[in-house]
Length: 283
Image 1 (cartoon, rainbow, N blue to C red):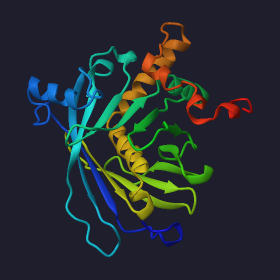
Image 2 (cartoon, rainbow, N blue to C red; image 1 turned 30 degrees about the vertical axis):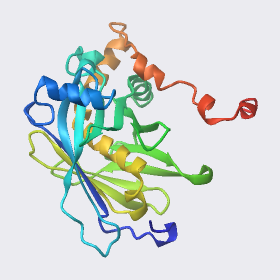
Image 3 (tube, one colour; image 1 turned 60 degrees about the vertical axis):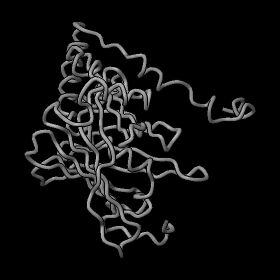
Image 4 (cartoon, rainbow, N blue to C red; image 1 turned 90 degrees about the vertical axis):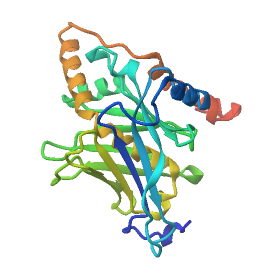
């Protein structure tokens, strides 16, 4: 892996394609026995799982070698009971990524209470979700922020580095685009380290993550966050509409949202896991 002072941002070092199916007919989930097999591989493959897309990947080790063609890496599921089969105002988006062999890779969970609090402060519907991945013990929050009336969509997240360091990133929408395209900017250096391109006119939706930083291309945690974000792009209009409708009904006393217990579990005190006993007395 290149050292930080040797990183050359510019060429594409790694690609992930999240291709969402236009219909429910696909090979990964065809038949009851196939679904039972996936559940036997991982408990993360829940009984309400619906396979909604595939993941393809390509990577190279340096800027001297040629980027190879993409190959199938895994598949994407949607928890139907929380989205498709829930009432409009009660929907909560939860999607999971799996490898070809059925091993769990990452989960994206919509944080509904966070969205309502942010929307109340900004007076507009905003999106928030968490990412959990097999490469990290930490939960990553990705939040949408309002930067002014003329700005494009903006989201932010950070990942923890060695010795207490961290890297901060902004995901901003492209101003001139035929599809839903974004660029990812690293605060340190203010460089575009990745891009997310959507295939305009694709019925199901294909979202391609292109990572242009050699160190971040090798950082699986960073890659999982962008993969999950790219899938969220396809659902964000419905999420904002849901939050906007619920927000106005809640203000008028006509409805009150509830927080799913799985969402509450993500708010548990993490210091019990990350701090030593004597350190707990100092915080």
